[in-house]
Image (cartoon, rainbow, N blue to C red; front, side, top):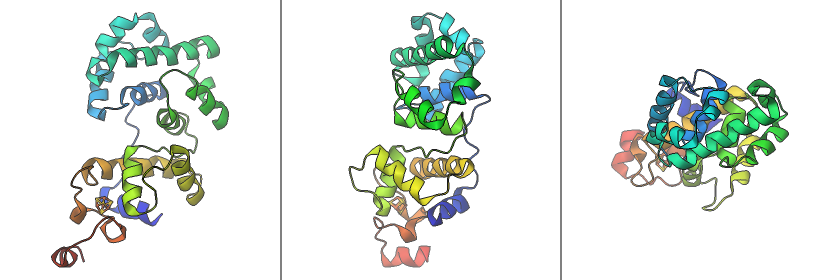
Length: 222
Ligand code: SF4
């Protein structure tokens, strides 16, 4: 929680997830895999402009045409296939009723999501947290990089072990998990960069085992 408060004090509320509906959130979670949010957002705009942001509408479009629309999100052939795979499960098993699908208990929902082609743990957990509003902590590459540098994680810690770490140390609170993941993303995106992190500007500098400030820097961040 100390780390959370330092981040929140620095960045303020992040207002995640940027989507108008749960379905749009899910589409965004698939489209943002391995690319920046900006690229995913451009693809979502294309789908919105074409009036395709519903499971039935997406399924009615041949995969090649869908791929053209989501091209800004890169890996567009695969991503069109992933969107179709998700929508097919929704239509065939839940009659297109997204709320019924999201109402599954967390374990069942996670298992069903992970069985869908193209949905891994990070995407599944983002959907559970941000679309189903159930308390599960989302791990991504930023989470590992930052908490490894802070000294909490080993270099090859598994997704599940990192998730357990957060969930054992935090109360099961959807709002907290929502904001904490968004704060980690903000730090990873702006400050704790892969190469040359901006440690002197970092709100976690004083508690980070990676940061070895010079005497001048200590005076500056004191
Ligand atoms: S002090 Fe540096 S290495 Fe540590 S979390 Fe901040 S930016 Fe990352």
